[in-house]
Image (cartoon, rainbow, N blue to C red; front, top):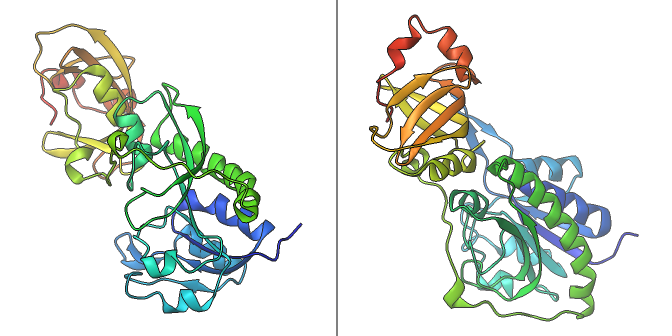
Length: 313
């Protein structure tokens, strides 16, 4: 049944789309707010974000302020009963937060107060967490520090990548919000204040964090590679050229090798020394080429034994 409750939705990437579509199916979405269009690829042509694409398909008014803290009057004019945000990408000003009758609700991809910030999914894997989840929360003027309404957790599997977790948490967020919104509207909820002592921050991935650090342990390097797959991607340098690393396996444990040294090329892939043993690179992308199995790359290398002893990084 379609509710007459009016909603403004704020979000931008693929992660936000299931939440937006759920709201369209169950409520009256009177406006969508997304980040401004950005140039894509070498052509520099402006690309349309996934959330904007959905808004256009459903003929919902779309707003794309460059800085929402200064450009929010049009949003206030919509006079929504509730505002829902999910991976929007800007801090919402107090004037907007205070305007809806039922408040401003955020769908955040972590178990707050852990992993506040713009890259909670990446950092959950990078830091070796064994579980994560989704938090439905009231928004406040700070970064993800509002009162918690409801949470649901899932395990992080050893084979999970940032991409697979994005997909799982996107659906979990949609389902938990759908379940929670009627209680928010009826007032049948308990607000839980976050513990500032337990808060951690997961800021957007920097360029420096994309480069694989082979001085770390096998587990840390393995987590770095899968934690950056498929965006932005981990990389190293081979013969001065950038090589993306998409998948790897944890190899044998030992010491005494130079971190980053290629110690073997074989059927499993490229064996590289790290702090406590070896990491095996299994899916790579040499500069200017498509993703390929490391074994296929080696088969096309003029003399693959020449790779042994080279230092990556």
